Length: 137
Image (cartoon, rainbow, N blue to C red):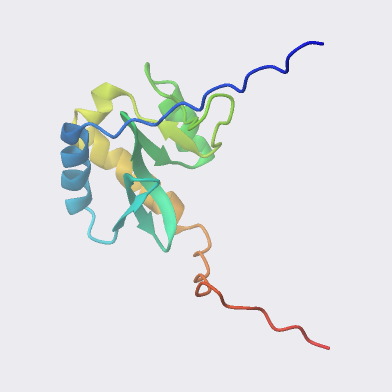
């Protein structure tokens, strides 16, 4: 009788580097309408409850329109964001290091992401934990 295959170990996500976190905070300081919070333990920026920028491990990610996403993906080092291999998040792009290291270029891309996410329908408020929906008879 053959043994079942061993499960593949789940890769642990690494924390974002402190210098990248500091750069993210500085970038958000230039965008007063951004709401800052943590998502999955990483700094994130939201507008109307919609994520438009964030960090994931050592990556800076932006949510962009189709046109801006295609434009950024042409830059060497940019890629679709895949939090897990083979599972891309279609609207999100990993920003290449040269842009992350350029405050003016980064700010321009952040504003593009803010504008796009700001145009997406606001997220509805979450129901409190334990709240039940009422059935209508």
